[in-house]
Image 1 (cartoon, rainbow, N blue to C red):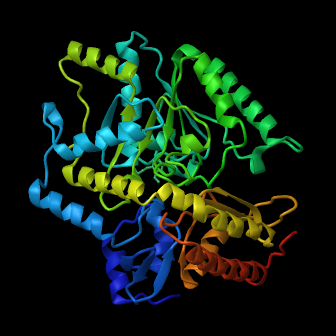
Image 2: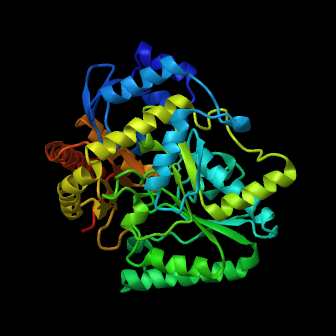
Length: 464
Ligand SMILES: Cc1ncc(COP(=O)(O)O)c(C=O)c1O
């Protein structure tokens, strides 16, 4: 067993880590990250890593961006806090909302700010309910998430999330949340079913689900363009068009969770554009500030806004909002982040770098451990399987994905196993082709080591 250093023991003594196997952590201790520069981070022993997951899919401009640091310093010196409650306002929030209205793929009349993606998705539910009460549809309240979707961890957002481990023993999901199919062709298509046929079947299943629940009770459907934390699941061709038709038939809001895909990740400003989705509203967070400061939010369409106005008039107040809804520091940094994205044409940069990234990713489909390589733009996933022909997965207890991520870390690349044994990759958007190649070289060595470990330590033969 590993002997923990004094530093590592201090962590184990005081921190409760999110999304961590707490028992294993007591034995392995933490990786203490001390500083970052560009697309690299450095641990407390001075080791350098390529940040292959952009932190948690968020540090789009990498580390140490002096313009963002200066924007934060200036705003903190001028007005370190103010809020938007009771009609107060400040310039950074106004400027940011104006910019987001211009960029949003949803028809935004107003923007509401939060400090996180979970709060944004909670807000989506509350706005939906409040709006449907305002328009005299008090029964229309159910929200449809999808299996393997990820929308955060607060009680409501975790309920939308379609990953069983985020529900188990937390007594979730809460009432009025149901889950539709996961759109993963590789895993869930029938033998011989094309992507289009699979999409048609899923849309029909969604229609059936809505009928079973009663369309008069279903208010909204929430979806990520690419399911990130559920395993980097790319939608099958024609999926969103078909789903959209079903939702329109029953007057159901389409909320697109752009928390990972927003701001360039898929090679367009938003994932909605990449997949031809016409959201009624979006949730955003993460890359809006390149994760220099926490900020999230939602767009509000004009009809929903009018509903909120009339309901708040009736009740005396629109009684929702967080202390940090529109924190001036976060808004100022977001304004600067969006300015940098535009000035440096970050979307163009992603389009230029993506072919290198996707070519290297897809080449790993031939690796004996990889069942499927999938991705778009600068996001990718490699699903590790025991048998390529049968697609048989490893048992979760074998921890093969986590082991591969640990080998990658030894090779100087930070990545993560998500949605089981899928290695998720999502580097800072500013990464260039040569570092992409270094990252995939490291990952290839890590996968080779993992395959060897599976055969020697787990004593399992890989099928081909
Ligand atoms: C798609 C998506 N939505 C929502 C969230 C939750 O955001 P937060 O962790 O800021 O609450 C995440 C976090 O990874 C996410 O990936």
